Figure (cartoon, rainbow, N blue to C red):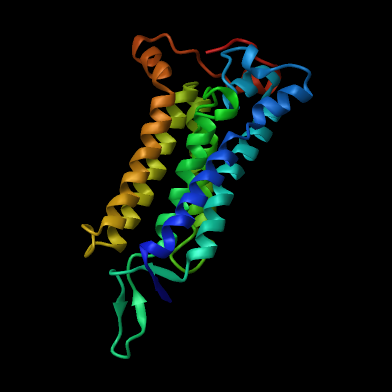
Length: 259
C-alpha cells in the first residue's frame, strides 16, 4: 500500500472527471429509439431515459435501456477503484510498528464515486444534447450496485446480490404502488444511506479528514442531482397529478402516454 500526494493525483482527477462526463453524455435511449426509427425526445414525456423508453416501447426495451445506463454508471467507478485500490491519501496513512502502511483514507473509496458523479452529470446535462438529458436514475443505481462491493482493496462479492435485491425491492415498490419516480428516488436515497453508513463506520476516527468529507459530499451531490432532475415529478406527486406507471400494462402492451 502506498501514499499518494495531491500533487501527483490532481491531473488524474481532472482526467477522470472529463472522461466520465463524456461517458455520461452517451445516451442509449436516443440511440435505441433511432433504431426504432423514432426519437424518444419527441415522444411521451420527451425525456431520453429508461421510464419514457419503457412507456413508449414496452418493458423489454426499457429493461435493455436500464441495464445499459446502469453499466454506464458503474463501470467507470470499478475501473477507478481497480487503478487506485492500493493507495491512501497522503497525511492519512496508518502505519504499523515496522513502518508499513496498514490503513488510512483509501483513494479507491473516493475515486469510485468521484467517477460516478461525473457520469451522472453527463447523463443529466449532456453537452452533446444541449444539456437536456435523462434523469440519471439507472446510471445512479448502476453506480451503487457495482461500486458497493468495491471495498478499499478487495471485491466483496456477496455485496452484489444484496445490492441486486435492493433493485428488486425498488421494482416491487413501483409494481405495487405504480409510483415510478418516487420508487426510483427512494431507491437512490436508500443506497446512498447504505454507502454513507459504511463510510462513516470505516472512518469513524477520521470524519474531519477533508477527503472523507468530500466523499460524503459527493454522495449528497448524487442525491441532489437525481432529486433535482425529478423536481417536476415531485411537484406532481405532491399535487396528486403524477402519471402512474403500471407494470402490468407495460408487460402487456406499449404505453404511449408521457409523464
